[in-house]
Image: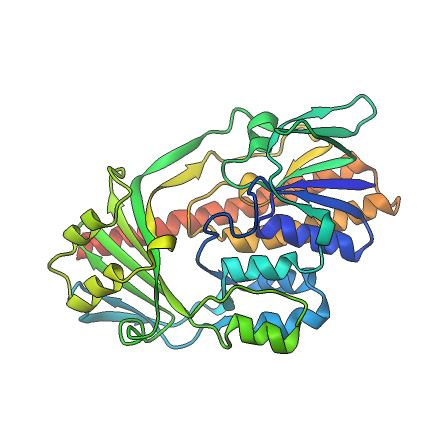
Length: 372
């Protein structure tokens, strides 16, 4: 059996690692020209089943490195006003587990895939063949046949647009200025795992990504064959604003917080400009199980939700569920379409939980702004 995965995000890579470990023929095709072709995201939290599934996707020898490059969830989170006056504290969520940098984690999940992963391969469309196989058509004219094609290509998924054209992506009535700033010098602003600053119509969410060890140094000692980026510990920040962005420049954002505490203004002003910007916040329509065929979805492609929807956790769980089904198909224990239908049913059920989590998070943020 051959599996083709479209998209080398966390979910697609976790699926590929599991299939490689089970000796399933798998290939991953990524539209970006290289792993560092564009910014790959910020701090994410993995806990409970998501964290367990991540560990299961990696070779046991890499578990010490995974632990070393994680961030601990410790010390209470804080709610403060725009002058850093503490309004309240909240203990770390029990199932938050560990914090990871998305880019560091992606490098770790690429380890060992070798020629099974190809960059600069933009999918144009897929074609379902008479024998039940699928043919992927790429922009360079290349075609690849597979028994199963998995769309793991994110919220803007090319695979989903063809498979479920009725599913639309919408801008929410808020947008975000998002970035990261080196932690050094700002530890007092975020002494715990998070800090939320609320003011009328504006909200700043700060998350600490403090590596237990430098990713580069940890890899050199624990797994010299793995290359990790030289990312310093940092604060991931999101400034939530009403309406739609009128510019991608951060300068107008600073104007909005001109009367805030100088340390908060300095934190935004000293952001890593290569990894910061302004963007709308998007949400996809709910997805229910569809007529199953040899094409399926994983991660944000299958449950497009805004931040706060447990996206990375669900992607890890998706990868574990789908890998188990595909291995069962390869071993002759279940028929392909039946196996994929079972996966899609479970994925859609899990996605409902993610949507509810995201919706509750945005309600909580709105309540804090209203009370500011």
